[in-house]
Amino acid sequence: MKVLLSGMSRVRVRQVIWISIIWTCLGALDALNTQAVAFTSFFSIPRTYIFEQFFWVNTLSALLSGIVSGSTFIFFLRPRLRRHSYGFAMVVSSVVVISINFFITILGYELFLSHQIGEGIFDSVFISRTDFLLRAPFYLKNMIFWMLIVLITIWTINVNEKYGPGVLFKLIMGRYHQPREEARIFMFVDIKSSTMIAEKLGHIKFFDLLNDFFRDITNPILYTSGEIYQYVGDEVVVSWAVHEGARNANCIRCFYSMREAIQNQAGRYKEKYGFVPEFKAGLHYGMVTVGEIGVIKRDIVYSGDVLNTAARIQSMCNKFRVKILLSKYLLDKLNLPPHEYASKRMGNIELKGKRQKVELYTFEESLETNAPISIISAT
Image (cartoon, rainbow, N blue to C red; front, side, top):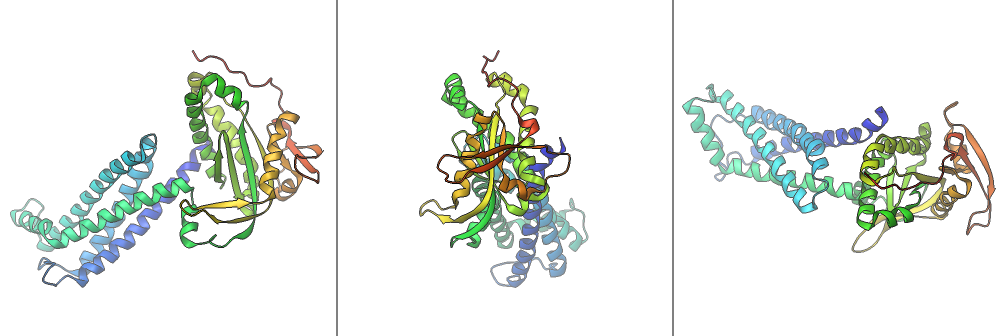
C-alpha cells in the first residue's frame, strides 16, 4: 500500500535532503576558510590554486557526498544495523560514511588538479601533484574537518531517533524550556490480551513481539504526521498537534493504517509467534501542559487530564467489544471525509476517576465479531 510504503521513505528522503543541504553549506564555508589560510606559511597551496574554481569543486563535492553518503547511511546502513548495539552501529556507520566521503572528496580534488594543470589523471605530472596535495597540511585539515562533520551527523541522527522526529530540535531550541499549554490529540494503543500472550510466549519472545509490533506500526504513524510520545509496556502513546491530527482525519487514518500494516505481516507473525496480534485504541483531544522535565535525562513531557481520559477511553474498548473509541469532543474536530467512516454512538459513559460523563463513538467496521484472540503453537 502506498501509504505504508511512503511513510518511512518520506522521513528518510527528508533526512537525506537536510544532510545534503547542510554539508553543501559547510563545503562552501570550508572553501572560504581554505582561502583565508591559503597563503600562510603552514598551509602550502599548489601554485595553480584558483579560489573560484576550488570553491565550486569543494562545494559540489560536499553536495555529492551528502547525497551519496547520506543515502547510504539512511537507506542502507541504519535499517540493517538497528538490531546491533549502538556502539557497533556507530563504528560501522562512521567507517563506511567517512570512506565514501573521502573517496568523493579525493575525486573532486583530482578533477580540480587535472583541470588546472591540463593533464590527464594518469600523467606523471598529475600523479606527482596529487601526491603533494595528499601529503599537505591543507588536505589533512580538510579531512579532519569532514571526519568531524560525519561523526556529528551520524550522532545527531541517532540521538534524534532516540527522542523521536523533531524532539531533539525542540530541546536544542528551548521551545519547551518554560512550560506552555497546547491543544493536542492523543491515541493510546494497547495490544489485546497481552498478559495471556506473555505467559504463553515467555518474556524474551514477548519482548521480540513488542519490538516487531512497534516497528511495523511506526510507518503509519509517521505517514499520518503522528509523534510517538511514549512506549509503556505493551502500549504506545501517539500524539498530534491539532491541525496535523485533524487534517484528513489523520489520527483515525493512522489507526486503520496500523491495522493494515499488521495484517500485511500476518504470515510472518503466525510463523514466528503462532498468531497475529490485535490491538485497541482510545482517542481524545484537549489542552495539555508541555515542557522539559528531568535533570540527568531531560525529556519533553505532556501533562493533563486529556491523557488520563484517553487512557480510560481505551480501557473501555473491551467492555463495548470494539477496536477503537473516541470522544465526541474529538469527533467534532475531525471533519471526517464523507462516506469514509461511519461513526456509531456508544452513549454517555462514566469513566473511572471522572466526574463528568464522556460521550463515546466508534466506527461500524471496528465492531468486533470474532471471539477473543487465541494463541496457537507455531509450527
